[in-house]
Image (tube, rainbow, N blue to C red):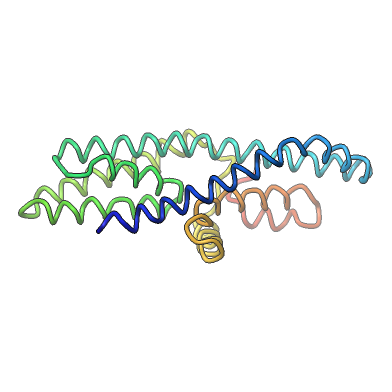
Length: 212
């Protein structure tokens, strides 16, 4: 009963991702013709700025998704191993849950700690083992999200915490959990686009923590 809504949400996310994958497969063959038509329609300076912005957005999003997926795998494996060593039931499920939640920055890392701890309170007697489990999971999340992840990701995609929270709130309200998953790539893409044009560069400066 506890896992049923989680599995239902996971199914919804996978369905959305499958739909996006179909769109990507259909859209990739149209990229080259579209760039050619875009080059014919715009002047030299405009064309260069727009193409540079699109190329940088593509590079940053690939970097973000690659590093985030790697860190999510590390987080999920560490959580599953820690729960298994504690003898907690459904250890693999807690690892998968944290793997998925790790795609939601800041909020996902915090939320992922509580379901296994609450389950441990039901499974074990006393408070010692749930407390140790909580401390271990918190240490895993802090070590990965505060040290390992920033080192792997670099400062190129750094956003102020308030921008991250606003982006998660807005895109989560628009598209639910899928919106929260893609909130950061969408926000970064918008900032890069704003930064490539003189009239909107000041907005990119306000929204980004550090510009290269």
